[in-house]
Every structure is written in C-alpha cells, then in structure tokens.
Image 1 (cartoon, helix red, strand yellow):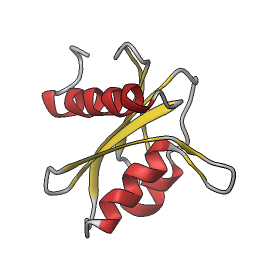
Image 2: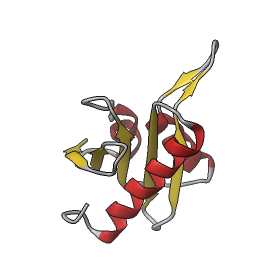
Image 3: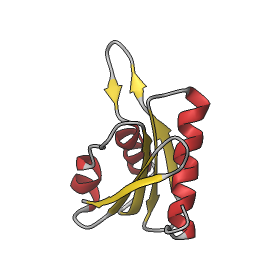
Image 4: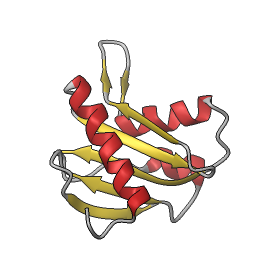
Amino acid sequence: MSDLSAEDAKLVTLARAARARTRAAEGAAVRDSDGRTYAACTVALDTVELTALQLAVAMALASGVKGLEAAAVVTESTSADVNVVRHFAGANIPVVLALGTGEVRDVVHT
C-alpha cells in the first residue's frame, strides 16, 4: 500500500477489517467529502444481495453525505462494480481494488 496516500491506505484497512470480521466475499470502505469513512461487507441473503461497495455507499447516504472522495474494495475477484459510486458521486472518483492481504491490484476511476 506504499503507493497510496495515507487516507486511501486507511480505506483499504477498513475494507479488509469489514471483510475479515464477517468472512464475507468482499469488504469496502468509502470516504465522504468531509473526510468521514464508512465500511461494509457483502450481504448475501436469500432475499437481498448487496455488494460491499453498494452497502458502504448506502450507509454514507443514510448519514446525509453529499459527496464521496474515494473508495476501496477488498476482494479476490479481478474486478468490482463501481457503478454505485459513479451514480452517486460522479466521474473520476478513485476506487482502490485490493486483495485480502491488502496488496493493491489496481486503482480505477468512475
């Protein structure tokens, strides 16, 4: 995580912790325009399925957030759906994609 800013590295750490705590497929964290962070994990129930990133954005929205600065997703998958960030926060928001070890695989922009 050395190439990341300290704030983005914190998002990866929060996403890893959310994933590890629940043994979920993914963990995610977002940082709002005021610097507050929200972390979540995948929800996979019979009647409801949310990606970790969808839930993290929903938690931020429920707190009254007006915008997002960045996000991180920890997953073993080779990609992550960043549409929820794009729809809420617009274009050019960085989303860090990392493995469960914290190793950064990529940084994509909405």
